[in-house]
Image 1 (cartoon, one colour):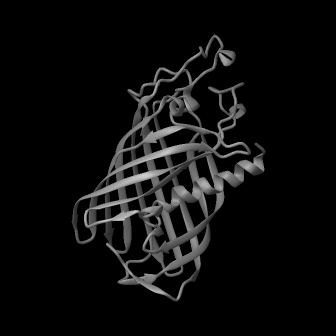
Image 2 (cartoon, helix red, strand yellow; image 1 turned 180 degrees about the vertical axis):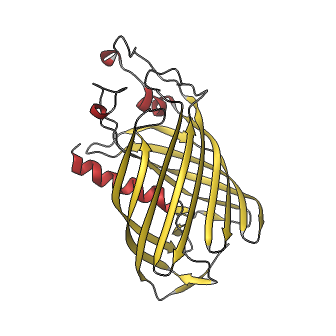
Image 3 (cartoon, helix red, strand yellow; image 1 turned 180 degrees about the horizontal axis):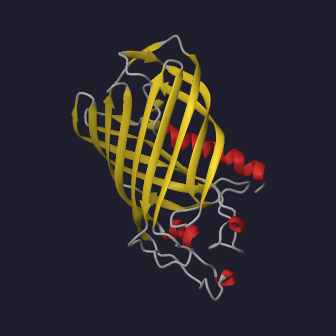
Length: 276
């Protein structure tokens, strides 16, 4: 994959990562949709368990849609399939950035890691709510695909988590935490070492499926008139993961963070009621 292709794929990854914290201002009614453009900065480890990171600076599209079924808002981009008082089911999406093996010491001489896209159902159960806050238990299950000229399905991922959202003084704050589980193929995509790439310092390795670590993510966002700003920080550990003895695991605890600023230049004339 060329640098240009990688950059185009990463645009989508950054948009997905930053949309997770996206929100509008706290008003009783809002436009059906809003659109804008901005710039985002991400500092990401090359992959979970890597001891190297990369900084990305790229344009980021801003889009909010508040339809009855299709939505893109502070809870991410999704299709709302079931919407009950305490239970809703939607579509969960996620993405990872690419890694060139020539830039990574642990993977030197191995195939590059393509950017990936994950999609699947997500069950949300509201445990408690009160005014400006809401506590949910979430169960996303996603299939993962590489984003390249010949996409490949690389397995499944399940990331149950507990999530709390709070609105305070115009700010929207969210924190989620939970374990990660991957199929053998999913874990193997990142942590396998095929025999032909083994060396004295990097023995052959086949990652098993199962527990893949734990993650804590916090995000904050706010609208200032025509401008939206958001940021996140994620702490990730692979301690105790089924593959934590892979020679590609160089650092068991990693941190990622990012922020974005967008100018919202268009919105619909149609208004919809805010749903809390």
